[in-house]
Length: 322
Image 1 (cartoon, rainbow, N blue to C red):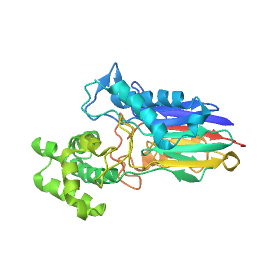
Image 2 (image 1 turned 90 degrees about the vertical axis):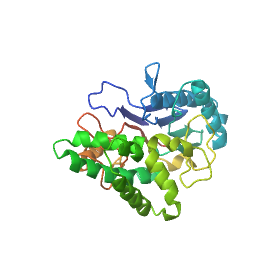
Image 3 (image 1 turned 90 degrees about the horizontal axis):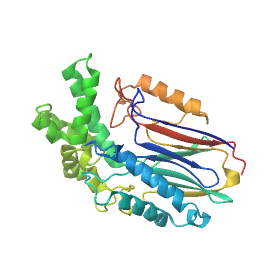
């Protein structure tokens, strides 16, 4: 077996850690964790809140998978252990937004491989089969973000695209009402952006929910996390038990798996081949072609001269022979 791995911060100069964490414990577990960037910039003991969540859950994953019997437990039981560890680490803290993370795990279960995914990180098997959940709420944010960027690009001009991107991030993360109060966005424009996102995502029956969310911003989407009852509900790892069963849980015999690639969503798309070099080359080509992430791989953030659009991490197991 050959193992390749990389975890690359969003900051181009590399002087700050991102919120991704990777984990490799041969014979036990391989994983990636994508901590959610805190829009308010919360830091605990020098560690950003998103990275704190990813590190905490990674350590708990090491602990719970030590016994092979635990690797075969129901997904809900594994997630409850991980959730409890994060809850214990963060309870009593002054967090405006609960620290959270995604996870994608490859568990070595002896004769089988078991794959667990919670959130929008992904796993590709045999260089072909991609397992990766998506969130409807992210589609709504992405639609609104595209409209906002075009507005700010026109406002700031072609020589100030970094400023346009940062203004867009502020508007989409803190909400349209905040941008209206700051006189960066008009009430009429906000109404048009909300209507377009509602139509694009086919959410006419939930127009009020879309409007409320976009006006308050991504910083409030934690209200939908692990909370049933709304169209935007989603499972995540934030210290409360995931309860919507939106996760992926698959088991395959080892002789059916030749390669495993675990990746965070900072990589817009997997490459054609199973190699770290190709993952990096594919990312570079996509970023060059769609620097502001408005096209085929549209995202809630685009790139700037100082930042990629997101942190990115990948763990590759190749040459598996059962």
